[in-house]
Length: 295
Image (cartoon, rainbow, N blue to C red; front, top):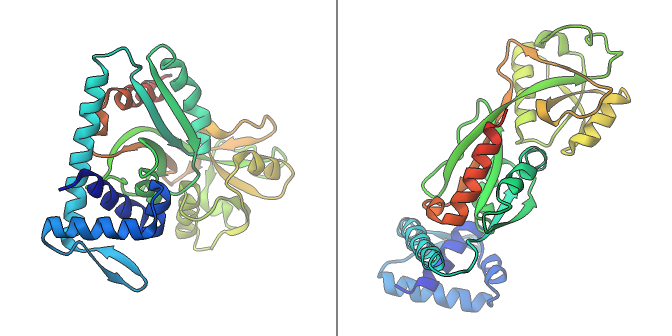
């Protein structure tokens, strides 16, 4: 089978539409469709079927995508191995990170890689963990986060490494009635106004736990994914918030642990299967592991 056609099939699995694949590979949609038809002819079975106005993978197509991951991953590893015999640097690694995780880990990761010959092209991507597969279409390594109680994002086409756990605390202004306590029981929060994040992110998942314990749906008055904005709103008395412990930097806020509920988020590094066999990717992953383990 033609390797480039396998790459096009994998892109379709990642991006969902022929148009998106065409844009990513600088091809026309008709050229993408033609290459997919040729690949199906090579495979001897239908790889795609209509799904409304779009196409979706058949069972055979999904199986071939897994094999495409293996073939393309092996080619990447072979290229990296050959490069190691020359004088070229170990490579450029594209990394996606959620913003607060980037603030916590990225500076140290770059410090650790400074003399390695591996360059990092980092971009902030503030999306739920469910979007990891789509991000791996454009990035080699994705730093994502999920709620304590959520299942890992690993799967047949994603390898996931858990890095660390970060507690999620209640954040409130010092004049708040609860500010003098050592911790807060969930039932004490039933009447609060909340500054939360968009649905699907770990902080909002903890609010679901608050609702389950108190029997009261939290009154979310603002949904802001920028924690700096959230801190300013809380400091001005516009509500209380749940924030990851290491993301709190505002000196005028009180941070209290929640009692009676497991509140935290798990940092995970996601890669394509076998990608950690590439020296440059392995160096980046190792730097993240070391930075996350730092006291």
